[in-house]
Image (cartoon, rainbow, N blue to C red; front, side):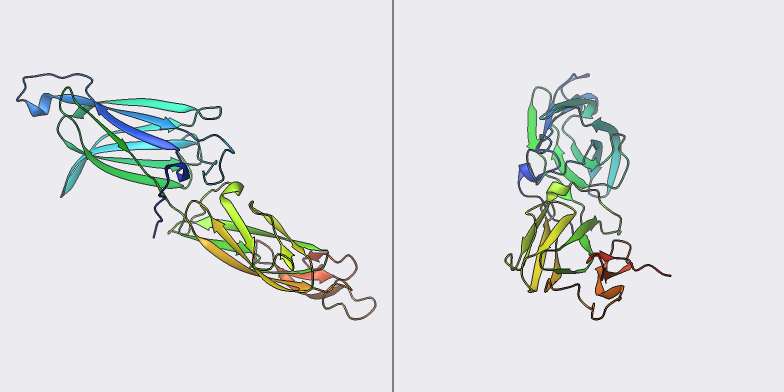
Length: 278
């Protein structure tokens, strides 16, 4: 289930203000079908890198408007807004010929590419009633993250005291499609930082072994709230785990890479790598 982003600054857009104002009209006061309003959208894009909870990879917003009743909807217009260059930029678009005194549904979808392609990162649907001639209506719109679940590679980590191992995470939507995310949108926490430490944010990150023992890492995607836990084992630095006799090339397994390939300790270099087949 998609998680509602409850804070405006946690959205793909820092603020999306929808205003319904009159652009013009035709016909007499009683002719509802010929009285037209216009839809104005003021989009405040977040500064790049200003906050870790904004998906910086969002580069466009597709806006679709339809008139609706409980049993049907009629498309009115669709437009694509590309993210402008520069920090803290704004976009203003106007959609004319909106029906006055009508129910409309506004759907806004954020994409990672400027041309509106790629897997959707966030979506919002807002239903509202247009104003009459001479009136205006303003409405803030919140977006939902499309991230449904996350995975980690490797699913467990083994390292040695003084060593390190890389971990990466990937976000997926409900259809198991990869959702593009920014490294800053991932937060990390170790259950035992004195045993295994990790950076507060980023993707991928390096887990550093401090002392022999075990710990668990919790990774949280800040926009959707989805989490995953990775178990960490830190072995003594006297030698790579499983390297028990002279000339031994590879020791114990130390996890898998992002492609699911099994990795083992190299007894000569102490690195966690894919064993070479001779």
